[in-house]
Structures are given as structure tokens and as C-alpha cells.
Amino acid sequence: MLGACLDSLQLQSLRPNIIVVDNGSVDGSQEFVEKSYPKIELIQLDKNYGFAGGVNAGIKKAMQDGTTHVALLNNDAVAEKDWLHQLVETAERNPKVGIVTSKIMRSDKKHLDSTGDFYTIWGLPFPRGRNELDGGQYDQQTDIFGASGGASLYNVQMLNQVGLFDEDFFAYFEDVDISFRAQLAGWKVRYEPKAVVYHEVGATSSRMGNFSLYHSSKNFVLLYAKNMPVKLYLKYLPLFCLQFIRWFITSLLRGKILAFLKGTLSALALAPRIISKRHQIQKSRIVSVSYIDSMLYHHRPPRPAKLEENL
Image (cartoon, rainbow, N blue to C red; front, side):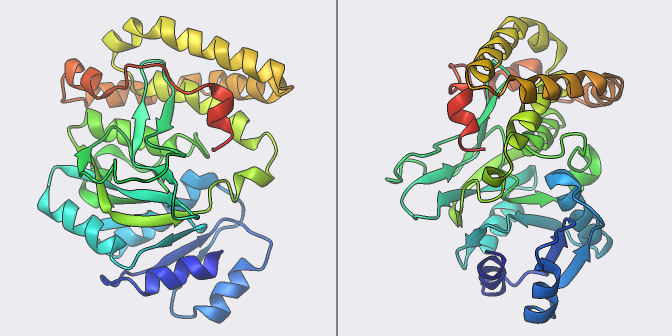
């Protein structure tokens, strides 16, 4: 799928500098890029550092080159020709917008994958509009809690302030984590419906067994523990615990309890680092607790099994 992705980037109306990060692949991707796209910069990593580590390598290189904005696009996605132009135009019109996210369609070009991410008072994030038939119901630009890391634009000034993607997450919810940190630091996350990409959902994770459950259960704990302001942390802790129990039971019934427990134990093992990060994040918060509460999704989230199917 990489060729179609890179072709769509080379045809952008706003021409980008393109960086491909090869996350330790062994399927010939490196040779493919070198042969078919010799003018595109290729960063070859020695192993798989996860989504967070992979994109951080590319972001750091872009920042070294003096860019003001960095866009991420998954290798299993194809962008419409004005995708980047729409993202950049929205960002430049709104200097307090730290992240601009896209209208991400499924590859059938009929159903939605994401129009930004919700973060619930139950501690669980999920994509807005996922699996809905696109009828224009999300065609209004709006501020949203989180942006999908698969197709979003990041202001480098914001990244210098809040930091890059947290590599303890490895994969899943790391994009909601950086959005949460941006929100706490006073930056906005905006959804731009004119920036359209088409995504082959689950093209990578569907081949990796319990990989998604392990990391999403781990990061479910990390996301809440790191970022939720103390008043909201305590207020919604009962719902967070109830969501944990729901997910535990679902994993047990589906024969996946071992992956869930391993993810939870990994989160607990990271507690010292997470406490240190939380202290720094909360110390730097400039927005009110009521503002953060207003940005949270106050209804019941999807069932864990339904969410896992589309990670």
C-alpha cells in the first residue's frame, strides 16, 4: 500500500517535503522506496519502535530541517490532492490551533473512519463517526478533543512546548495522549472536513493477534493516569474502574484475558515514569478544569469488543 500513499503525497497541491520512516521492516519496503522513490528521504530504524517511536524519528528530522508544521500520514492511507493545503490553511488561520485533523474515510469512500477523537469520562477514547455512512453530517469545521495520528498536522511550536509522542505508549491512544497534553497547555485541536484521506482500517494491526488489546489496555491506564486533572481524576475514577471491569469481563469471555492482564501489568510497571510525567504535565496546565470537563464526552462509550475490532 505504500506506493499509493506516496503517490498521493507527491500529487499534493501544496508540495510537501516527504520523509518515510521504515520501522525495522523485513518485507522489502526499504528497497522499494530507494528504487521507486529515490528523491524521497528514507529513515531506516534498526527495529520496530512502535507508532510513537517511528513518527518521532520523522518529526525530529523535520524539526531539524526548520519546518513549522509536520503532517503524519499512515502508510495504508491515500490523501486527496488538497489534503495538506486544507490542513495548513486551517492551521495558519488559527495560531492557537496546535493540531488539525482530517476527515478520514474508509477505503470504500462511503463510510467514515474518524472525524477526530472523543475522550470519555469513562477514560476510554474512540473515533467520532466511525463506521457511519458519510452523508455530510460531519462537514462542519469544529474543535474536537483529539486528533487521529494517522492523518493530522502538528504545529512545531506546540510540539516544542508539550513534547513529542510518548514512546511508552508504543501504539494506540498515543495520538489522544498528545492531544490531551496540547489541550492542557492551551492549544486547540481542530477538525477540518475538507482535508480528506482514505484509510485501509486495520491493515497492520489485524495481522498481529492480541497486539492491539495488549497495548490499548496498557495505554487506557497510562492516558488517564498521566493527563486527567486531579479534580476530574477523582470525580470520574468510579467510571474509569467500571470501564476497566467491563473490559476485563469482555476479554475473559473472548479468551483474551492474558493479553489484557499483561497490558495492565505493563502499565503498573511504568508507574514511576508516569508519575513523573504527570507532575510535569499538570504543573504546566494553563486551562481550567471546567474547560477540560466541557471537552470530555459525557455519554457511555462503545463496548470494548466493538472498539477493539477497529483498532
